[in-house]
Image 1: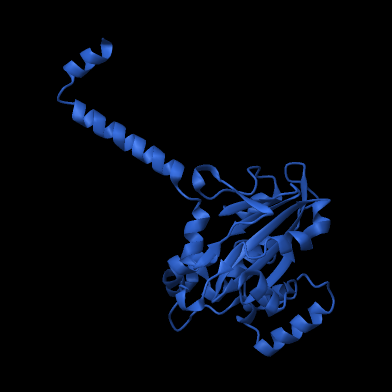
Image 2 (image 1 turned 90 degrees about the vertical axis):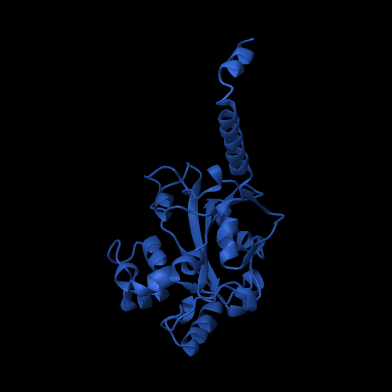
Length: 272
């Protein structure tokens, strides 16, 4: 009875009321069906996200970017907003993804034209590495000298490993200082992997329990082909005279890089 009276009194407004109801339902359904933002970013880089038997993709709230930890006192909070979270089947390792290269595709020209604001475009990955390592002056872009210093802190993987794992051109790793703290009273160890192709880099943050840290090699191997750079002819490359060089070659000659790879490969276990 109440509904019929309401309709009779608001005949003229009824079409508008129905329109807004349908609009609300449409927005709500779209938000529920929206894909996680990581898909959008990876598509910009022409990178595929493939199903994994060992990892499951955890949905972020509203499918947008989130922090690795909500507690500002947690060291992981300093990573800022991230694009995706993968959970290993054994529950001892989470992998957070940051698709850094998507910013190059979207804002490469703006960054290139405003070096006073963003620094040299070739240093974008090292800006993040610098922040992760807590190296040098806080908030400042890394200098060429700082980049050379930070390269000494990285572990370089053979180019073949990068190719097999992600169809990438290069891959490096470095530790992250947890300051003796445990995230959520569980995760105490972190290792960062950076890999890329055509100057479009991806950061993987492996967050592990104390027991899980012993199996880092396995967690990395299990992530093989979860992210995959597609054929070069389809890649969204950055154009211009100052095109971004790849991470390992930005300020080091290729011969020096190969020498370092050979030396470091002989001092650690082979991962693949």
